[in-house]
Each structure stands twice: as C-alpha cells, then as structure tokens.
Image 1: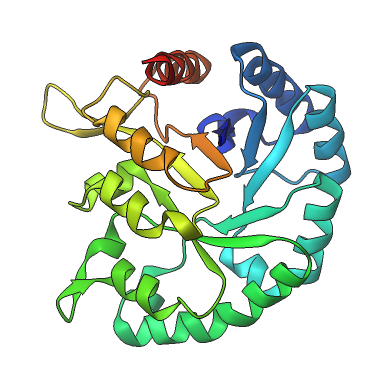
Image 2: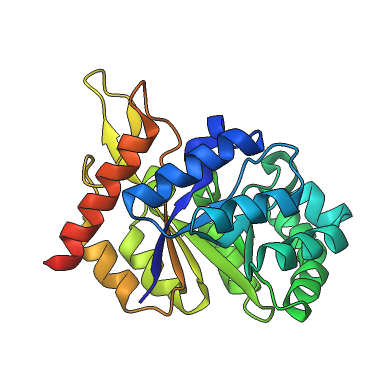
Length: 255
C-alpha cells in the first residue's frame, strides 16, 4: 500500500530556513504523516535538511526539482537525493510558453530523455507533474495524452494531481487507471467552489471530488506515495488543513 505524506509546498512559509522547517516537520509528524515530498525549500544545506527530517521521525519520499536545475545541475541533484535517501523526484512545472505545443513536446522529449536515463542510473525515478494547461487539445487530444503516448519508450513517470485533472476537465480516476503503471507518486488535492463561484483548493473531503472512486483506482496501482497538497488555504491554518485531510483519508480507508 502507498505511504501517505505531505507535499511541502503546502507549508512553504516554513520551508525557507532550518529552524522553521524543524517546527513544520514536527507538526507534520504530530498529525500522523511519516513522509514528505520536499518542494519550495529555501537555500538550506541538504545535509541540514536531511538531519531535520530524520530528527522529526520522517523520511523524504520524493522531491520536486526545478526544470532549470535538472537541465544544468544534475550531478548536484543526484548528490542531494543520495544525502536525503530519496529515490523519487518530479519536475513541478516546465515553461508552457516553450513546451505547450506539439513542437514543444518534441523539444521536451529530446531534452528530458538523457535526464531520465541519468537519474535512473543513479536509482532515482523521474516523473512529470502536470497542471490544468496540459489538458489543452492539439490534433484532437490533450497535450498530456500526447506526452503519455510518445514517452512510453523511456522510463518517464507521470505524477497525477487530482485537482489539476478536474481543473482541466478530465476524470482523476480514469487518468490514474490509465497511467498508474508508470506512476510512483500521486498528488491528492480537493477541488471546491466558493460562494462567489471561485475555484478553490480544499482539504480532502471539503470539496467535490469522488474520493471513494479515486482511491479505489489508486489502490489498484503500484503507487509508492500519496502526497496531500493544498496550494492555498485562504486564511485557514495550513497545519489544520493537513490534519483535516489526514483524518478524512483515514476515514475513507476504513470504509
């Protein structure tokens, strides 16, 4: 069964220095999570991050690594993952003005293949994390569909994000079933509407997602980690939002 963790972008206010990070990690452990996806970290030595994570009783299940670093600092990225004892990374976003077209997809596939191969040789999986814009259609199907079909020959993982699938007008459970065989990481993120009809991020169970079906689909796949993420909390305490998500996930799992 996949391990449940926190995508630390949710807590980015506390990820800019080691002292604040230690506080955040202790709170994450207290809620009940045991692993994190490192993301949006400030300029801290990776050794200090690894020590803080270990002292909190957590692990780094995965990271998000900026595309620029993957392209220009890959040796250092690999070293950092070894220090963190981390076997998974993903790119959080690539510039859509460069890559969001079929020609751009061709360029991305050429550029990403040697990165994937190097990471795999180092024992690190690499996944593509999408947003909603990858569901724009080109030649009759979404950019993300083209990516999945045309990258099948290389070991590129797909990190599905449930919120962004819905924002793109698609079905999270269907996408999980489609690419679950190549998906070590899954983002669990709810989707709600405000009183003023604004699309909002929400704690799990506080929006309109069909979580029974989503988690059923996920449970059928060889996924290593589920990461809870809430990009914005709209004035609510992010730790309490993560607690709400944790409690909801436990409730659904008991059904």
